[in-house]
Amino acid sequence: MNAKTICVAVLATLLLAPGVHAHKRWFEPSKTVLNVGQWVTVDAASSTDPFIRDHNALPLDNLVVTGPDGNAVTPVNLFKGRLRSSFDLELVQAGTYRIAWVNEGITAVWEENGQRRVWPPRGTPFTPEGFGREVPANADKLRVIQMLGRLETFVTAGKPNDIALKPVGRGLELQPITGFNDLYVGEPATFRLLLDGKPAVDLEVVVIADGIRYRNSVDEIRAKTDEHGRFTLDWPKPGFYWLSATVTDDRGTPPATERRVNYAAVVEVLTP
Amino acid sequence: MSAMYRRIFQVVLCALTVDSAHAAALEVSVQIPQLSVAEYHRPYVAMWIERPDRSVVANLAVWYQQKRGGGSAEAAGAGAPEGGTKWLPDLRQWWRRSGRALALPVDGVTGATRPVGTHVLRFVQGHPPLGELTPGRYRLLVEAVREEGGREVLELPFEWPVAAPTELKVDGQSELDSVKLSLAP
Image (tube, rainbow over all chains, first blue to last red; front, side, top):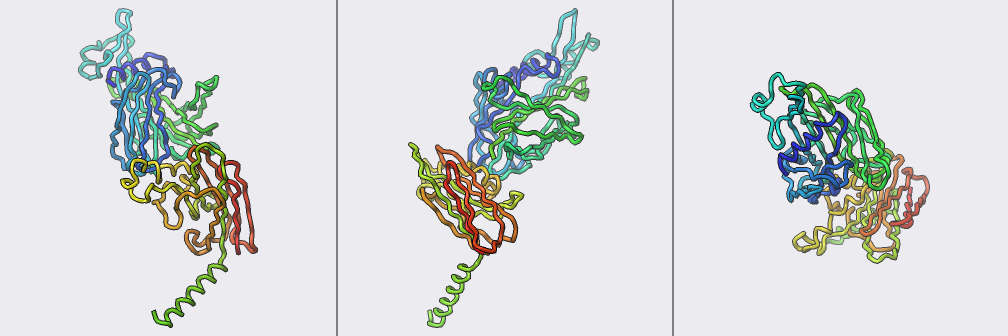
């Protein structure tokens, strides 16, 4: 539960080639369709396969929970174990809650005398002053990479609403066309991906169902967004699904020259 | 009450009874099966009428565990959160189609869970909870879910109104025995 862990995670992802993720971050709520006044508990971790508690707990400092009226809801009973974190939410208001884990950072990578250099070091935040001081202006093979990561899940008490789902307008976000808490086997679901609030066109979405331990392959489902950022999924079975997309572009905040935007969402599909 | 008023009251009462006996109506008969299980809890049951597009026309009945003691959560004691409305989302289809948007309880619709046996409910055209059912194609849905048990949803498509008395039937496999729908013109 500290900035250090976040930076380690960011760094680990950064140093890998684009498109390759060692570990997937995930949430797993106890339920997603509930009644007003109920409690929900959410597990959070990162691991090679989503929903498998075998790697690291997710730090909970950068958790952002938005209630059905658009106001922040404070999660309680925050716990960080070795393999997973968890927290509880009391669903006092009717409507849809957006549970997000938001992660941002800038890292500079360059070479000096044949040695790979990274700044800021683990556990230290990026500052423009520090960057000016520590990173040589003429650094060899300099890359300044901005990370924008967002992990989300959604739960609804009573009747769903969409106030909490209003786009933030930064990075990748998922918008419902089919309601996030209205997903059933046998009913195709359509969502929309936004990048900085605008349709994310022609983007690949990777979908993984839970229960990986009980089958011999990950069985990823792939979809592509259309010109409106929309994509449609057919759910092969009920359960939790992890959806993710990544964009690499040059729209980083200066001095960043590259930007890596990650998004992952967890939704629950029920039997009709 | 004067003799005249009493007479008028009797006439009105009689007229109402006659009207309701002759009005188009539908009768739903639901059989809750006897199950040989170690721990039996009465099922939660919802029955409602849908249009072909799955929008709900009328909720006919919803049976769920009432809070113990029938009073406030405080009066019901420590077990209170387990009763009442907590498990209603488990009536998954009903919850999705209308339950989640309702303010509960609903007068004349919601009530306590029922025991094993056949339960017959009659709904009259023009009267709540059925209301005025306009001519068209509909579906009766009966959903049952039981703690320590399973869930079952049965559907009976029907046309309304009917020219002659009509009886429709569907048999459940697990949580419900037969569900019958009798339509009167």
